Image (cartoon, rainbow, N blue to C red; front, side):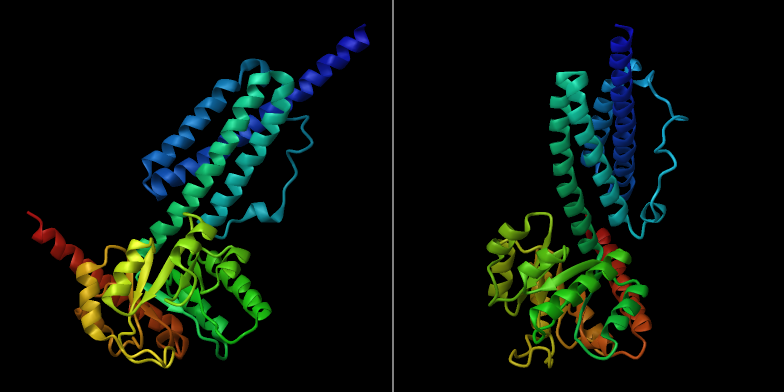
Length: 360
């Protein structure tokens, strides 16, 4: 009888130690996410959701569970992994802690069934809440960064193209599109995976040109589609609301249609004739002026823009520009990127001041 009782108590002790460790793990992970929602994104709604779940975890973290804690006797306290010692970006930090919370909740759900049937039910529901929070948070993060991005680099393959993109990222670039029309899918997939990882290392958004399937395969932040590509509605159905969808437009009708169909941003151009779009006549600065008055989502003037003509484009009303050759063919991509960003920031500041003065 004593052996049986001892066995039962030993099992209860182990279960409570598992519950204690994972309640701590889930609460800690949620607090890390909550801090970014509060201070990084200024989102009271998402910070409140994290806090509410932490408080619910605390209610389950009873003294009966805590009393079995044995930190000195835990063989797992010294276990670590090199990937845990460094975070290369906010996105990686958030993803790691979301995974941490989800794993902890799954453990709590299963072992909680042995402790209290209601615990299993409660943590199953919370796990799905965290899945929803993850989608909302990563989508919000992407769209916030899109809103703050004023320079958009579109790649063109040439000698040392990858190094030039990295040099631009080192100059402060936060938005990159991989565009390659000629390579086969295997090469495109490999290049996109490599470039996506590079962009995320620097905290930049990575957009895939045309191909929704490849965007999903490499976990890109979004896709950019043209007028002849898949409809925006289908791209949205495949990518979901958390990823970004951009669309090229060359005239007012296309601009209004792209906005109505749910694009997150649009390209406006080509402003000047460009070999990137040899079949497209220049839309000119008049279209930039039209976009300034009518576009209700972020828009990027695109097409033949370089440091020599940038000010004309800004004077026409643009606050965001997309560049290909201006950076990809530059001898010093970092410096050129910094020049573009300084001019765009100055223009954005002036417009903001003007808007503030004009308010009643």
